[in-house]
Each structure stands twice: as structure tokens, then as C-alpha cells.
Image (cartoon, rainbow, N blue to C red; front, top):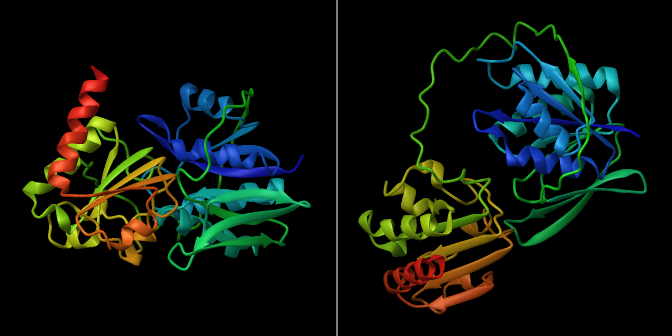
Amino acid sequence: MSEVLVLVENTPQGIRKSSLELLTAARRLGSPSAVLCGAADDAAVATLGEYGAATVYVVPGTDGYLSVPAAEAIVDIAGRTNPVAVLVTSGPVGKDVAARVAVRLGAGIVTDATDVRSEGGVVTTSQTVVSGQWVATAQVTSATAVVTVRPNAIAPEAAPATPAVQTVDVAFSAAATGAKITASNPKVSTGRPELTDAAVVVSGGRGVGSEEGFGVIERLADSLGGAVGATRAVTDLHWVSHDLQVGQTGKTVAPSLYVAAGISGAIQHRAGMQSSKTIVAVNKDPKAPIFQVADYGVIGDLHKVLPALIDEIGKRKG
């Protein structure tokens, strides 16, 4: 069975959910092999095996550097294994790595895929295009396909295996090690899930009225165990930080539930959330464009609707 390389992300909290989604997708194409840059602990290897990794390639010497060493590691391993595909999580870093790998391998590349499969032995993808208005199907006909997959697009499914662990020593180029991270300031934890990984996202728009008014968005997110998002208008007003922006110039999310409160639904915002499984919109304007993509709509004042919803959730939780 052809090998599929999957670049996985290991955090202090464990393997990222998006990496488990990639392993699930990889099984549709061939035999999944995880590429883990940095130290590999027993828990990480066990998790990767639980989701079907037949091999775990551990690449030391990448800590403290930017994305280039990860790209060179994948190219090195691909040269030894001739994989049918390389899968990477979509995002700023993931796309940077994927682009470098595709150029080095002379491979076709698809970004922001929402589905990956094999049709007639050819790697085939689906992706939303034109700000989410259309779904495009693409096939990569090169020997190796490089694909970045949107987080939450594919549900992770366990397929227990006992992976072989191989340490791969890569001779990194001077360019790869020329820039090094000398210091970092970890973001203060809110206890909420990462925006792009969250199963539930509650977002607020200009309709919340003020920075103080945005608090009801955060309370609803916390009651649902979800992440907080916002429109560009809200982040430009500095009501919340820019890393919470959802949309064409922000982050793309595809949670099981997306609640859009006080959001008119401009196409730039819809481009970042339209792939959500279920969309609930709350807006005073019955003609707001957000209702065109919503599965459920509530016409009303969010400052009345959301507190009532929070109370009801609290009652049901007991």
C-alpha cells in the first residue's frame, strides 16, 4: 500500500486534533505515516498509533526554528519513501510548509481542502471557492500530491495500530537554520478551545454594540464549551484581539455549530465560516445576508436572545 506522509503537530496538551483528522484522511489514500518534528514522547506515539499511523518518523533538531526545517524534513523522507501524498493542516505555517514541499518535489498542490479521497487511484479533493459560493473538485496527477486540509473538515476516526518509530536525522540547509526563534510570549490561556479546532464557535459582530456588550458572546461560548470568534469590524474596533477574526482575511473555521450573533453576513465573513455543519444566526434585521446561509435564524435583539439561551442551557445542565 502506498505511503502517505502526514505532518503532525505535538503541543504540551498532546497531538492536535487537526493532526488526527489528517491521519483519518490519509487512510483513504494509503498507509499513513506521521512526521513528528521535535521530541516524541510515548503518549504522542500512542495517540498517533490509535489513529492509524503505521510509522512515526521523528525528526530531531527542529525546535526553535521556523517552518523551513519541517519542509526539508518532509522532502528528505519523501525522497526515501516516494509517498502518494503529503497532508498538512491548513493555516499560515501549514501552507508555507506545503508550498515549499511542493516546489522541492515538483508536486501538484491543493490548499484548503475540505475532503480528500482516491478516485481511480488519483488523489481527489473538494474545496470551497469564490468565498464559499461553490465547491470545486480537483485531482492531482503528479506522482506525489501535496494537500493542506482545513481543520474540522474531516471527523477523526480511531483505527488502532502499533506504529514503527524511526528517527530521521536530516542535514538541514543554512537557509533552514538561518532564522531562529529567540523568545516567545505564550498567549494567556482562556480555557477555551483553539478557534480553528473548536467543535462550537460563537462569533459576534458590530451588532453587539460595544466592547462591554461582547461579554454575552463570551458567556454563551463558555456555556457551550466553545471558542469565541468575531468579525473584522469588531477586531478593527479593538473590542477583541485580531487572532479571533473569522473571515476571508482572518481564520477559516468549520465547527459542528457556528453561532453568528449581531453579524450581518458580508461575503468576506461568510467565506471563513460557511463550511460549518450547523449555522445559527441571531440578528434584528430580517434581511441580513447571514440568514441566507443559516440553518436556523432568530430575528431579535441578541442582548435578549443570548442571555435567555444561556439561562436555558444552564437549566438543562442542571
